[in-house]
Length: 329
Image (tube, rainbow, N blue to C red):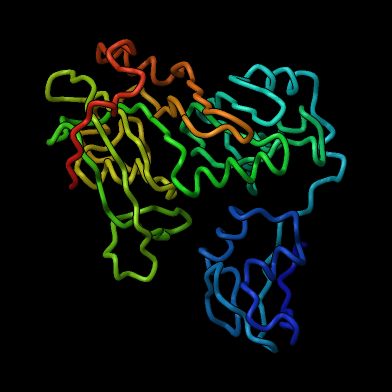
């Protein structure tokens, strides 16, 4: 759809969230595309800007901007042999219910207006419909490492439940600017999304802020390269957008190679490096029986950081948090 239109909210849609109102009419739109429309003010209700969770009132006028075209229904089947081989090469673990991929840095998990190559599209390599694996969590485009999926609806629901109920232990490796003090602890700091132009940043916020969400990150220092940088393990206890990146910036130790959450020192130290954040491992209950522990080999991007500052992956225990004395900040 290329033109701006004005539509009216039906009586039966009174109280419906505006994002769900859009999804009912244009189901091909994903949450990234919708949020960008709301954030940039292209969607208006009775002339006012709205957020995704704004409740509509019967009779209201909704300004509908030009929308991305729906994909060709055959697009999901159109994976090339090369794409299928690439998708299969990412597999870290697979059984009848669970699929774990080693997501490369730079590859988005889901598509957007200008993103046509992404993990979600590659999942067609396993089939369509009930055979198509389902995402149960996400990683930022520039973060590498373990990405879990459910291969059946029930497995996906159980895995998603483990993440929602904090039964999943995710361990990230990162190289950050400076030396955090204390060397281990927990960051408890509410975060809120803020639109800056056409970009969205996550920033610290007061708990009473209506947009603020509680966020908690456990951290431990593994090794230092003098006072300049530290190799760290990070464990998010909540799953907020950009949580680790925003939390480390907030305590004065940005993750190196981060174009969004940086400062002058980290930018200088990051020369030649991409984002130094890697989802190293995840441990959680298997949908059927026992526990799953999946570990991803370090990415070329993190290897470059290790080489630059003299770190080695054998400096880290399999669970760097096992002996930690928790201190909150």
